[in-house]
Image 1 (cartoon, protein in one colour):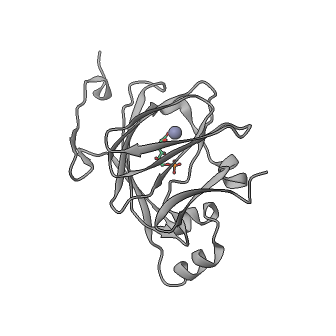
Image 2: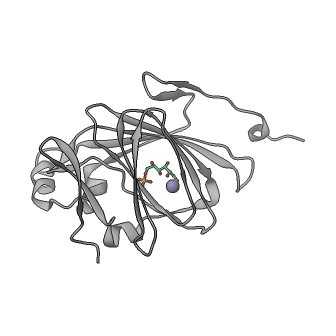
Image 3: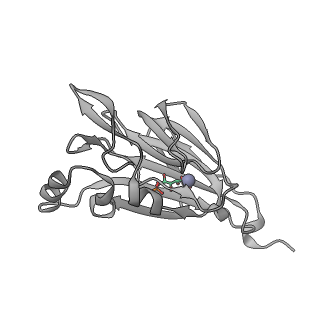
Length: 192
Ligand code: S6P
Ligand code: ZN
């Protein structure tokens, strides 16, 4: 006997808008949710004194036939900077050590930052059409270095779990900052 969730589901993605329908869960990440991730504390305090800007939206469709089913997540990362540091996702590593993920950049440009717990670091350049495989045990963060919204589709197992603690504690090895109008990688003072 099939339950309601056991039937095939299709959603329609709109490539121009970077949205899909129907969506089940929507969430926002504002500067106040992410302030610990950016290096320029004066810039953060100055912005937060007046407003709490939206940095990214999360649109999800979990498929729930079992606890090892997959989720579809779309992240919509607005263009902009906090001080000289480009807008980025919070970044996390999966709690389960055998859990990979696929990211598909459908709109915009930037970088996918990847890092192991020992500090091995990679930055994959992204443009619309780039598909990246994130191996298990690599923390991942996306940075929008363009002038338009960066949108990517993620597919991962619901059981993967999200651990933000290593990123809150030490961040990524490199910051992506604007220098002379272009993205530049600089060593993070928080990393040791
Ligand atoms: C989940 C997947 C994405 C992120 C989303 C926001 O495994 O990697 O759906 O949750 O891009 O990033 P973060 O770091 O705030 O969870
Ligand atoms: Zn993930």
